[in-house]
Length: 483
Ligand code: NAD
Image (cartoon, rainbow, N blue to C red; front, side, top):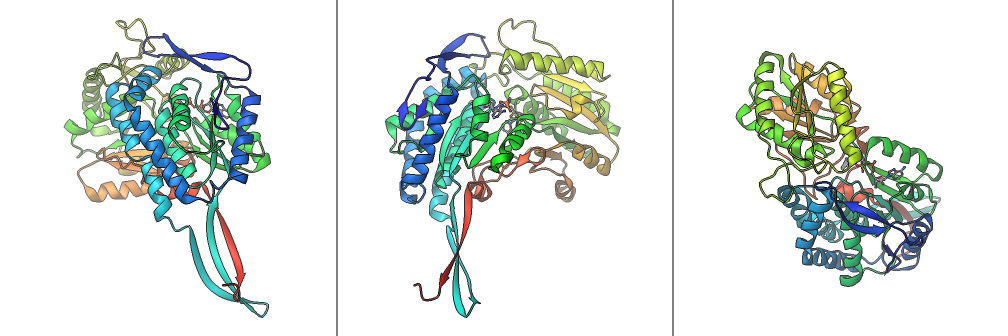
């Protein structure tokens, strides 16, 4: 772990196992942090914020972020293998989404924003009490940020959080998920060995105990929680943060719809639908897991998407041709299998998949699965399964499709497939989601705000909106004579 500039073991001396979900083998161990370790990490972050130049020295911060960028790149290939081993994400996805795409811009974009952002602006003077008041609005760091990360895209989420939180002058206590700690401990070592980031500015506490995260949420020395994870945990964090009224930035779950209109190019869109929902074995918050098909072409679409799902190559995540690896853990495997049982009990028709693959006896694998004859009121259509499971729901017309897409507690993303640009934009504006993708076009990058409506979260990661998430606003009144 990294606490106050030092790489340390847990104060209890205990460690816990990191397990490769594709082989079920232990790939190593990591320090099992305690409440006392968290306490020291928070104290270090508080001290670094309150007593050093970090919050005010923008040049130092830009330099530090670019040093961190170089440091990460110097171990890019080690990261690649470690990410495959600890997340089970296939090599192809690590390249396209997790590692290489993230190293492109997650730190560089906020480092550039340090230079470009309007940190201060003037308002027109006002006359008050017989004197002229000059007015300035300033942006300042929020303070100590508790950054809590999930296991599904751990390095990606971590770097986007850190880039923005550090660029804006905050100090951070980072808590990785127990299932994927190595990417964070490697980062900790790189920070110490290869950057001038001052002690206390970034602390990393690993633990097998989720409640270490809760200690960050309840501690009055922490000013903000930047959380990515499930909606259930997000709700609990909101409750636990209430007594200290922290700033909350919550990136939560999703159950996104893909509306396939009758003029969509099925030859392109159906393979894409199968690829999306099996990306990282369905363990993505924004994946379109509900396919909405026009009733007039329902049977044809179900049949064709079945064929596409059966062609998805899955297995060893090291194989460059594999598109889908395992789910993250035995617990998650059980949970997804539970949803597959539930779907049948609810009366949905299992079209393909639905089991652990017979030919893979090791690893937490699940067959790419399609359920048809799904009604949007079924739990498999309402709850986030986080497995490679597509539900196909029929609709009657455009209004019906929009109604079904919006009939969800979530509002993270939505896909629209049609050849009619007017219809695409009309429907995009009616969807209550933070991200709308037309014909599979994904806007995601560090300069594009990402986040959800409704119970998919509060606030935005990335873009100017994400940068401002980590800032406070101070309004100054100055006598006109003060020049
Ligand atoms: P999770 O909510 O179980 O855990 C996320 C993190 O919170 C972990 O580090 C965990 O240790 C910690 N945690 C657990 N209980 C806590 C508590 N009471 N207080 C503080 N911290 C606590 O989520 P997960 O299973 O790790 O990740 C999957 C979830 O993350 C899915 O719901 C997915 O949709 C969501 N997710 C959302 C986004 C997004 O950008 N919206 C991105 C990735 C993942």
